[in-house]
Length: 138
Image 1: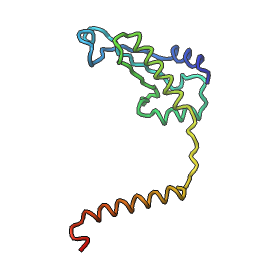
Image 2: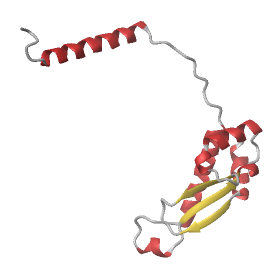
Image 3: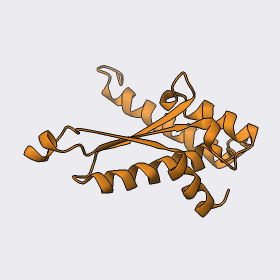
Image 4: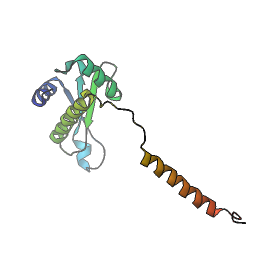
């Protein structure tokens, strides 16, 4: 997946909507539509194979609508342009992270040192609890 190609295809395929953002900003937030919500159809993302699209749909399920659109919003900045850039970069990062194959986990067992450390910690904790008991020595 080429970075430049992904940026170009995302910007052309996205639909941007602007609305008033909440939070700090004084009168600015009451007057200016600075929040950006990007809507991108998963079918419109070029350069992904079927497995990557399925992984994208699965990992980003809370952000995907019933119609198959991916929603990303940004409202952290005071300007519309900065929020638009932030939303595009967030969208690109989400797609990259979701399309990447997860690292295969190899099952391992704890080593001898780890086992000894665990037993040693249990023994110390047991002694501490035993020392708190009243009449334990008698």
